[in-house]
Image: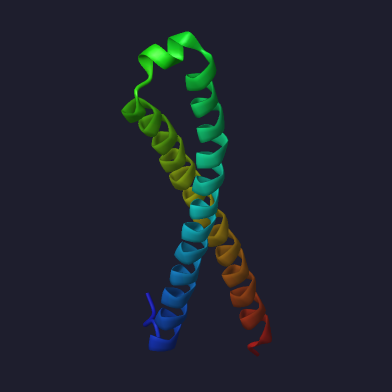
Length: 104
């Protein structure tokens, strides 16, 4: 296995940081949307349904909303990181192939 240059490692680290940052941003957006989408029906059902009023105390309501938000965050962040890594991997492979074709 050949030696890896410092610039190559720095480039890979920068790409990994960008990939994880995109995942965090997408996950945070999904968590906000999921929180709103879950909070509205949860709070409305507590106001309108007798069963929900008697069985869902504020702690249960918060648990429902935060569980959905957490799940949305991790699912979307994971998918985004994997998609970005896959895209970067294909780009790196194409770039390496192009560099090999340029060499005499």
